[in-house]
Image 1: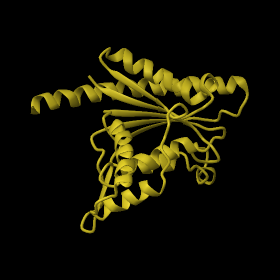
Image 2: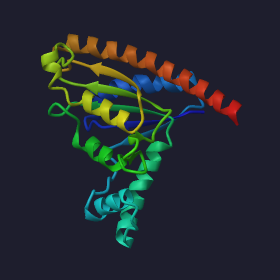
Image 3: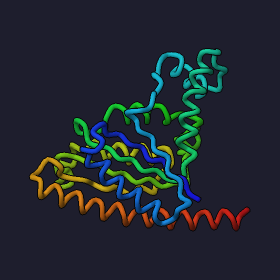
Amino acid sequence: MSKLLYIETSPRKDRSASIDVAQSFLSAYEDNDSDNQVETLDLWDFKLPEFDGDTINAKYRVMHGEAPSPEEQAAWETITKITDQFKAADSYLISTPMWNFSIPYKLKHYIDIISQPGLTWSFTPEEGYQGLVTGKSATLILARGGEYSSSAEVAAMDFQRTYLEMILGFIGINDINTILVEPTLTDVESKAGVIVSAKDQATSIASRVQIKQSHQFLIKLQVY
């Protein structure tokens, strides 16, 4: 059995192109193996803690090997709990619209919570930064009004794809599939074609992800 964490970041719900395509991915993923487990994390219905003074002080104490105060320890335990939920998954599906050439603030907030020293990455002067979330895959479904893959000039304005692929790689996830749902700001017929094409990609990728996870599970059984 494999566990997929689906991180949903659009507040538009049934009017969201990224969620629409994500549902095709999820249907294919679950159809391929009824034992697959999907956990949905709707960031618009999830209380994320503020990354306040106690939290950031705890972070730096962790980085320097110091003991946190009781207040800092409590704040850090909240961060650890959310990060443990993230790390418990075998694979990830993130559906998100583009906001102001980047990602919604809810998703950035979540990333700021889980990208922490000792939890998802480490650093030593000898080895530099090392991602700790390894052996997992992620699929990104990125909806955007314009066609940002049309030219190098326009692509330079895309801080949605570039940031998400970079930060996932930073924490150790290098097996990344990216589905572009673009352009969505077009006529009805053209947009419908964009959605259909993205759904076809999503279905195909979901099947590959499930097969890869099944293979990895068999290898683990052989090892143990």
